[in-house]
Length: 126
Image (cartoon, rainbow, N blue to C red; front, side, top):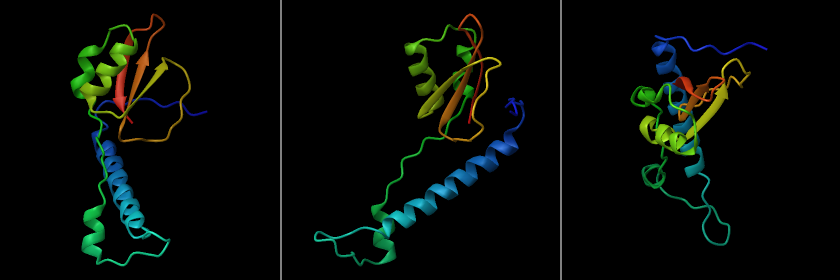
């Protein structure tokens, strides 16, 4: 299996992935807005402007920078919460250094790599 490696300076790829994620979420939100039903199961008919204003998609893109000061700390539930709050991530994935992980990208997830002693060795969004 291919191993995922974090490359510092891969900001261009991160921006492309963030833009693709945002576009996909906007398309999904627009599609869902047009599928609403009135009581009784009948399709609602409203102008596109009204439908678009009814949709609220809450996203918090991850930013690992503010959480980097936690490098070297021992991973625990309290630190996991601090990492999520500091980075703006909606999900925190913790993996051991050298272990395999899925390669799917999530703009709202912080990936935290811990060493053998359970200390935070690296972290990045995705």
